[in-house]
Image (cartoon, rainbow, N blue to C red; front, side, top):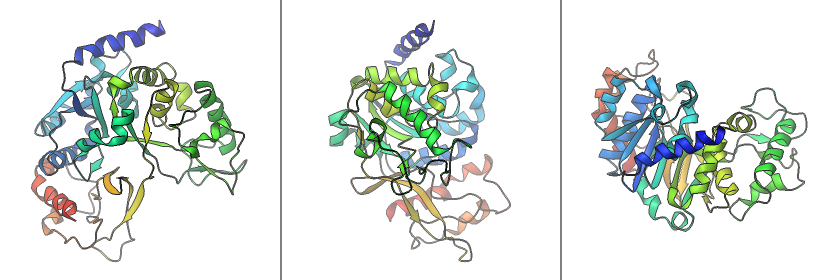
Length: 355
């Protein structure tokens, strides 16, 4: 019965095989429509990206109103519920990303989060030497969350009240079950799961490894890896998600299980600091800025905070006065009607890109 679920999924995926060879997929819901709209419009109009884009969603989580707004970016909509039999609520959030990656008909895929902001046309990653060599380009997660000494809590834990040592030992056991011996593609600082090392205050281990908000994958080179990815995020999802944060680690683990090559970007994400227009405010930052070969590639959040004044990564960028009516501090964010004011927002992004 369980095997038939995967078999049926991949059979339906064949229906999408007539798509273009390369493309971008993004999972989106009504919550992220405005952010997705801005980022895709910037990707199209200012970065000149011509790759076809698929917007994936589950059932009614993306309304017709949201679709109407996103249509202007030249996207195609895909409903996971039409190819996957699980309840719609289980296909949402980070659950949808690995399933969309498995289901898309693109041979070569750039997966991006709806709130991800590119600093350049991402299509160049398909010609990067490391991608051509391995067929998979992954990015590291932030280094802030770490396992430390026995019985002590890390500064931040996505796993509630679990002690780091308890969590680490269960993760270690699972990783060893999935992968007997790590390959050359596993970064050196991730290999402690297969040694007798233990985290300590002097030698803490990061508890997050891969960032799943963006990646590039050649599915032709990773057929078994994609099948493993589906397995970990469906049949074994509860078990996997109990020791890792959502889908993040399932990508490199799946390819490692299949003994298929992949590349982990060597530089972890950085935090860029800017300044609020109001000098009395606390100095803000844009977190999770990822670099490829020393150049900014993407950030996990657009460099703007809708509840306050615009955040400029480079303080030399002038304030654009037409933002004022969109930046009411009493508002949680812009409404759908305000989304038609793309000219003002894209002008800001153009200035940012020029720097």
